[in-house]
Length: 296
Image (cartoon, rainbow, N blue to C red):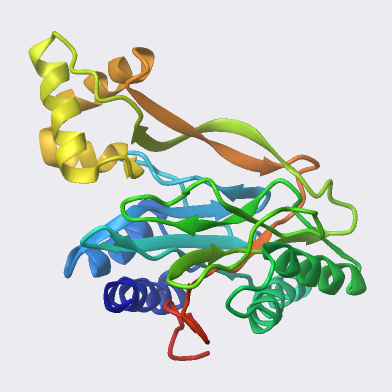
């Protein structure tokens, strides 16, 4: 549990800083790199900083040289995590500037708080989703049905165990000595309540240990495994570590099926999306939020 706590503290510190640096007009690239540096200074990111605006629910990270800027008319989701000897954290906040966006953000924040308060060691995974959906619908909002929390493993963000954000009859329980990332996504009533794949995200993951015959491709693939295992990484990290030429190698590895590039996930009707997320560790008799921030 101690390494889960260490990873959680780093993510919490980075997200505390997010509230200070996420501003209208700021460079998305500069923001993500500043937040990631907090994690790099003591450990490694579990995955690239996601900075997803408006109807983009998840999976956007800036590309090398990205010129995208934060638009204050949108809800901005910042999702990040840390890795300490393979033990992971995963946490997210949403930031908005008044109006209906702020109402949606506050609802997502409270939904996560209430959802966590209802789980105990051994309780059904479905209990979390039922709590989230009941709370959201009481406010005239919708949870996103096809985004879910997930159990964490050693060097694994998604072990195959999902925690729904809706009232769904899913098997499984919150098992002691396990960590879970819990992350309700809420949208207004007029939203579809689901996401669809959209544009490339600049986030990649090694999916095959096959070594290409080409020496440059083999070097890049080996570097990815040694550095990131099967965890997600950013194209800009590879450029920083191996140079500009590695970007073309990365594209070739993608075409060969050796690496996978995530797509951004966008709300199907294009409405604003709010998200909050914490990692929890399930003990024998208690639930510990490893990513709790000082202002909570």
